[in-house]
Length: 411
Figure 1 (cartoon, rainbow, N blue to C red):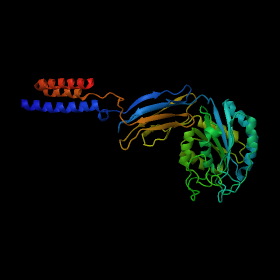
Figure 2 (figure 1 turned 90 degrees about the vertical axis):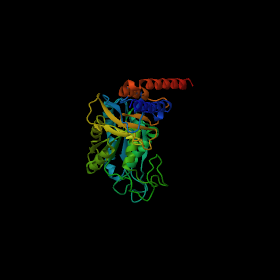
Figure 3 (figure 1 turned 45 degrees about the vertical axis):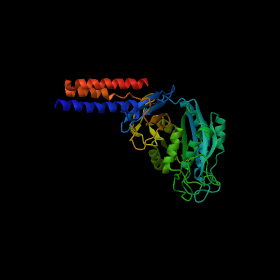
Figure 4 (figure 1 turned 60 degrees about the horizontal axis):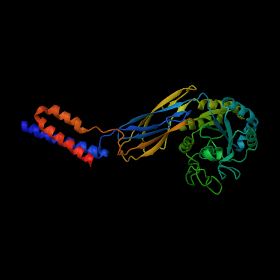
């Protein structure tokens, strides 16, 4: 029996030493844990923090990270882009909007002194049955500016025309505003970005123009007549582009289509719907109401998560957050070990900012977390289990192990 115990302890110790050296010489096969490798703090006065997480995800080992979003007392900078329906049915509304420009500017600047304004317009695709030859999908009429005279002149030059069927190209116009936002429109990186889309009609969406290719989501309106060579965009596609550009939409719409845009905002997960009077005479109040809504609701959306590493976000929304207060989202990251690859993704709080997460799923040569040496743990277990019976054999083997490790480290 004495001999059997000694032999068994030798076999067990040999196995332990083998596991130990595998972990030392080949860290990719060693025990590991998901871990935050580093954190880049957010810039001063940023509403969302931190700026970046660099993480390592071990298969089936969840990792929790926190995203904090602060509602500013009031936006430091506001870029407000007016996206106007100029189809024939909106003719009376345009006249009122033109008259309201000075009051609109004063009202907005009373809340945010550093505010810029821009103008875009849309009707529909210039092809039957959607529109007439004078219709257009989208046009940037004025890039963002603080020049009120330019704003007034641009709005005065808008006039209603064209259109055929009742729905218009609202979604495609919104997508164009997002993809052209940085350069053509000129949204400032550090400004709260809002597009106010005014309309009295429903919107066309993907599938309404099935005889042409799907909308590719870029800033080029395909076709000999711009926009006729591709379908309308999908709702999810527009949502993605708005999130990428960090733009919040406010839909200022008439009562007859309010439910359509409320459903759209529900699909987006962000934005606001406010009701216009039949002639848009309450536009200023509607915009102020919409701004108050988007300034206080916080959502967190996942962008670019190609491998599904974001397993859960809690909660999905913080509604009615008072100005000056912060809220923290808890995000669970998880790699399932199946076809995982390194990736970069973002968590976007629309209108407030984003956190980038760089995911590493390959174990580094310099491990994120030191790997426990199995010789230490299991060696003690062997001693405890078999007592002094195998002590001399165990001690001899441990000395050999130490000598071997020292020899390898010297080489």
